[in-house]
Length: 497
Image 1 (cartoon, helix red, strand yellow):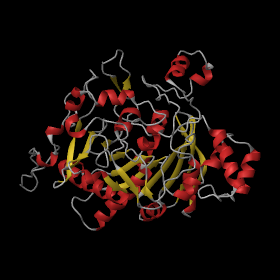
Image 2: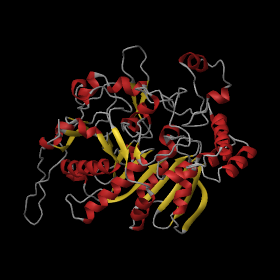
Image 3: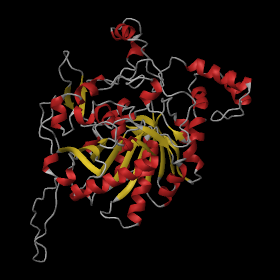
Image 4: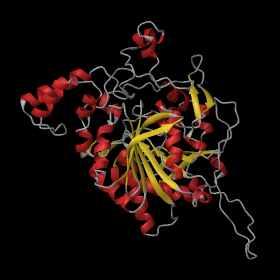
């Protein structure tokens, strides 16, 4: 239940001018002492539980907090948000940059095996994984009217969570604080950052030491996002020069809100046809059209070895196999009004194209839920990677004014993109960052990781940076964990990437 009612005080004797100072510390009831699936000793402290953000409604947001493995007292605190809308931030925890690498269960009914992740973002930061809004992951409300929400309410609720969380963990208030997320969190992050800054301006206690934010392959602006796909497809060699020239001419370069003429619609249909069958999350990865074919291809029968190796990483559980299915519709940017969740889009309880079996089996295990202080299924239901029980409204408009306001005030921003993602193509993020009109202070260049070109970057005045990650898809740390930890570490430290 809510940790706000379970505050425990430790006494630290700080002899300063003869006074004894009492300092509140992390709630020991939230401390995780054992995690099913791993025998190794944890390299840092882990905490988890609920923060009640609305007592009258019984609205509770679930978090999992990992202390830094390096220096928790000085390293930044980072809030991580996955998108959707409606997707749990355990997506990032399990599959991207959490403290563990997950290995699939060896027998039916057994738990996945966990290993320490050498590229965990907790190597250099304290990190909070938050299920938001209520109704997502393990977060819930006793009043189901709370499951009808939107951008502005979610930002307000998450700001309330942060204020209450730092009251529970006040020893982290002096640490630099950052907000990070990906996909639809391209909306969550800047709207929340705006709430945090307004709170700082208003002197709302506790005062957060907010320094900046990161957005990965993030939804930002309906026009720029909507016009991103066709240039991306052409640049990647997915459509011909002739088709690109024809669709550009017939649609007047407007794919976001194209003319309803037959020639324009016909050419756009041809673009969709050419892209059909590709993995929308990473065009380099194969799409498996059914469990039967997936069995065959993983047995190394139908694909050449060079193709089978695409997407491999050093993880025991490699990049999730993608099942062919209905993904977010091409050329369908997020617009004002109701935003369908992934399950609602696919008319299914699973995320299209994504195998989330490992996370689902682990987080729905009774012993795991008890260990991480999550409520039982009778209270919060089963854990799903993405939920269909919320109704979500995009009501914050374009994120460009948010970014411009935040960066003009000196807050650091890193906008990064896996350059083979077709869900939110890098071409849109590159275009809107340029559109702000800031002076270029670091011209387009390669950035290096482990002695290799890892992508490209362009830096603007007011601490705005655009970055690509070569060969990565929609969830960058899942595809390129070593390179992701590299740029993440440099950004937090304020070093050039």
